[in-house]
Length: 175
Image (cartoon, rainbow, N blue to C red):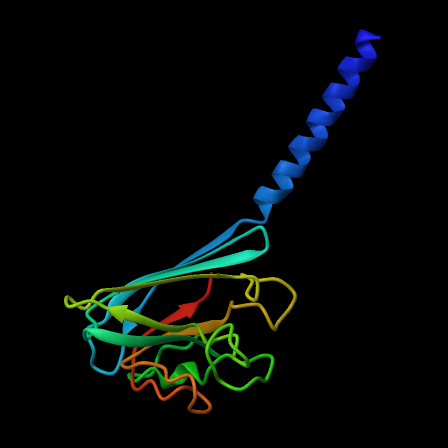
C-alpha cells in the first residue's frame, strides 16, 4: 500500500513539474535601444516580455521635450531614414481605423501617449494579449516591426496616424 501511495505521489510531482516547466517555456523577452531621429537627442530603451499569453511593454526615454508624446508600433523594422520614415506607417494588421488603445477601433500599433517630465524623461508601460513575440498569428506578432516615438501627442482622431508630429526616435523590434 505504501508503495502505491508513494508511486502516486511521485507521478503527481512529475506531472506538476512538467506543467511548471512548460509555463516557463512561454516566457520570451526582447530588449531594444532607440536611435535618435529628426535631429533630436532622444535616447532610450524598450522591453517586451511575453509570459502566460500576455506581452508587457516598457519604454524609458530621455532627451524629450517636456510634455506629451506618442509612441506607436510601425509596420517595418527599418530605422535607416534620418526622419524615421523608413519604418512605414502604423502597424495595422486587422485593418482598423486609427484610435485610442482599448476604445472603439484602433490599430494594433496604436500604443498611445506618455508624459515627459521637466527633465525630458518619460516612461510608458502596458500589458496586452493582442501581441506576441514571434508566433504563428501574423496579426499579433510584433517581430519585424518598428517602434517610433513622436515629437507630439496622438490626438486619437486624425487618420491614419493621429497627427503626432515628427518621429524623434526609432527602434527595430527584432531578436
